[in-house]
Each structure stands twice: as structure tokens, then as C-alpha cells.
View 1 (cartoon, rainbow, N blue to C red):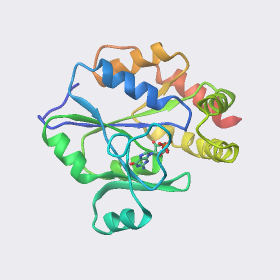
View 2: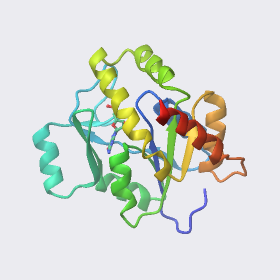
View 3: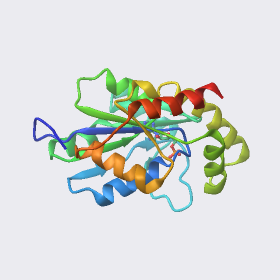
View 4: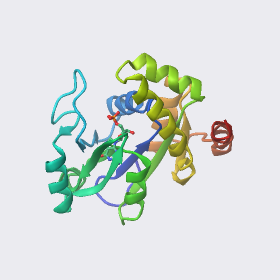
Length: 208
Ligand code: 5GP
């Protein structure tokens, strides 16, 4: 990855829920030749089955979250699908100072806040091939109620409207192909990235 200091860099990933972002991030971290880790956010939502406090998220109460917010402890924070989420400044500073590149899996509101800060970042928006596919993936995941899935699909449309603000828009149709494309973007390997193709797919999604 190109970087003009020894400090780690922020790599921002956003996507509508169900676009496959978490699996892609996990694969990128597993394959990475560089020091690269996933940021652990704080959230007020409950842990899902199998999720661990301090590993997947810091699961905290609304009161604790608001207290951290008042103390300016977040680099960014947002209300997503009815819960609060935030990236801790202390976590980011410690890792980036140690030269570790940090992946932020955050929503578009958080991305917009980071964009306004003077921090080195690379931003990637993952798009699904279609809304039907997005819904299928959310249903198959089985972790959300029907209402939560409908809510996530409504939010998906809003998020897609911001995709063009990101440095890269990447289609997740074929998992292995997408991993290759992401790897070449993040690790600066020569690659063929056709923004126009992906913009056309994005436009189709927005027209539906
Ligand atoms: P989930 O509840 O499915 O883990 O995450 C829901 C959404 O919240 C995802 O789109 C994820 O990117 C976003 N999210 C997770 N952590 C943060 C955070 O720290 N800040 C912001 N702005 N969004 C987050």
C-alpha cells in the first residue's frame, strides 16, 4: 500500500447491508501481506449469537455511548438502523501510530464525517448486483426479522445514492473476483478498475 509516512492509513468500507462487505473484509485481512486490522466500533445494539464484546464490537449502553460522545471520544459516530455506532479515536490513534492500517466498516454518515477530517484515507463502496440479490442475502443470513430486513432495504437505497462520493465503487457479484479487485486497489497492485462499468450498474440500481 502506498503511504507517505509510517503511520497506518484508514481504509473505509461502506455498503448496503447484505452486500457481502463483512466476508470481503475478513478475506482481505486474512490475505493481507501488510499490517492491517479491522477497527472495533462501539455500538448500542445487542450482540448477535456468536458475537463477542471487545472482538466484534464494544457493546455498550446508550448512557455509556452518550457519555463517550460528550467526551469527544469518537472520530465519527452515527445512528444506523435505529442504534448508535461509533469509531473510537483512542483505538484508531493507537493502531495507526503503530503503523497498522485500519479497515473501518462504517455507514455513509460516518464516511462523510471522516471525509471532513484531515486524515489519510482510502474509501471503497461495495454494490450488490441487484436488490433481489440483496434481499436474498439478508434472508439467508437469518439474523434479522422481516421488519429489520425491510428497514435495511429502505436504507440500502439511500446509501447507494452516496456511492459516487467514494474513491472506488466495487461490484460484489463473484466473491473471488471481488476479493482480487479489492486486493489490487488496497495493495496498489496494477489492476484494471473500470469505474464506468460499475457506475452503470449503480445507475440501474438507483433507477429501480
Ligand atoms: P451491523 O449491526 O450489521 O453490525 O452493522 C450495521 C451497519 O452499521 C453496517 O452498515 C456497518 O457498516 C455500520 N457500522 C458499524 N460500525 C460502525 C461505526 O463505528 N460507525 C458507523 N458510522 N457505522 C458503523
